Image (cartoon, rainbow, N blue to C red):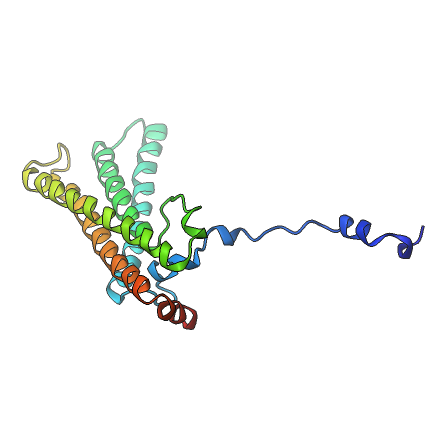
Length: 208
């Protein structure tokens, strides 16, 4: 049988199946205005610089954490000796890594979210949900700021081995929630602008 005698339907079935681009599930055009992007200069300059600085700080903390933990592993394995202050330092670095990482991920809209509904909504309705979402986040962050401040003011002791003030560890929580609250308020403002003038904001986003 020649190739010309193969029916068109059979030829289409023999072709390799098209694989859908997975990036369509990662990028949501409705929320594009709310993302902090340092490369395209999306978002306020202060938030962009803080996000970039936090990412560099995350890298430095991660390297220090790996070196500290690895040094004790090597010390125990080869020399049967470990530095007692390394474990304490690793715990403090890990706490800072978690909170700074949470703030940086929030700025870039990289936290896990179920967005099956909001992706299918029109632009104005989607931003109504975004506005409500970030109002709730802002309220929660304000509660955490108040609680974090109380913890910070009462942390008068020092760590057992290194003598580092415990308030320095609690400071990571306070800085994290303040940044998230500030970004949430900016996103509320952006969503309100889209709700009021949806066509103007969508045209601006396409122009960028």
